[in-house]
Amino acid sequence: MATAQDRQRVILGEISDLCAARPAASELFRSLAGLLHDELGFEAGCFHGSDPVSGFPTSTLPYGLDPADFQEAAQLEFSSADSTTFDAIRASGRSVQSLLRATEELPELSVRYRQMLEPRSYVDELRVTFDSHGGRWGCAAFMRGRRHGPFTTEDIGLMERAGPHISAALRHSQLSLEAPSETGPSADEAAAPVGAVVIVGADGSLVSADERAEVLLAEQSRDELLIRGIPSGLAALAEYARESAEAQRKPDCRASIRTRQGQWLTLRASVLRGATPGHVAIVAMPSSPAQRLPVELMAYGLTAREQDVAFGALRGHSTRLIAERLSMSPLTVQDHLKSIFDRTGVRSRRDLVALLMADRAGTAHLPPG
Image 1 (cartoon, rainbow, N blue to C red):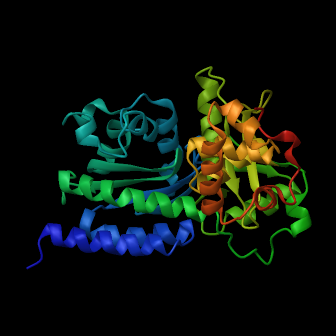
Image 2: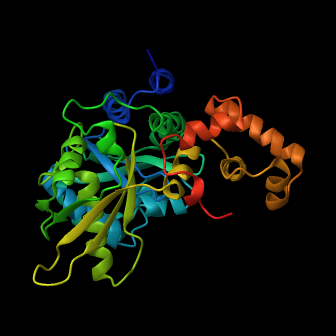
């Protein structure tokens, strides 16, 4: 008879094989839900894709959850100082955390438990952040009721071992373009530096969108959870802007997403003033190299130091100048460049520039340095 350890070994092997195939994020999440459901015994849960720089959730795949609860869940995620928010888990140095472990068996200390989990008869929650090479590429949450009871040390260990495989797959998914939609924008339209504007009401519903935003919403709606007609990533960003305004914070309410055509867009959200309290404007613009390149370099698996060297090469700096500015020897710079070429699949600096800057706005707007 198979032991729990045997079962987990099999599941980890299946997860490793799945992730090695580098599926699209939506396909990966669906397959993971099937693989993990019986072993973890979760009754509800969700997977999120994230902006790797900010960690902000940009997509959602739910399992057994009511979309009507999304706005309240987002409010609690962004407004509470709970020890079980994804940001708090990451700040603690962990990648996996359960509600009961985080609260030392006193779940009532958690605002999220009191307001969302307990009223829905959940006794514990397991949360996972999928970090790799300095970025958070996604996260997941699983809820259990009384039937299965609290998550165990073995459950936490399973996700700690599975996490690196999932993180790497999500990172690689940013480099794999899906086939363009038949109704999506043309290549010329996708490259046009024109903003798209969406207005979200106080209740989270779509108020209005310009013509370009309608194309973006239609594209993002494929394989994505809709919250009152809005893709969950945009709905979450609107809620974050609203919560920040009410708390009188002035954070950078923005996130990056990638379209099916491979274009990076930067979304910025702000609460509108006037006769429509609570309305939020979200503006989507093509990301500049300064916004896009850090994500792409992380996606290729470059270390922080390799990213610094890559930026120098993209600026056209010589090996000697890069070495001087980064306080390293020219030989070390050459070693880093060789690693960069290997990771990105190119053979020269010229190829690296062509890979990362072709059909872009040029290097004039690279980060200063």
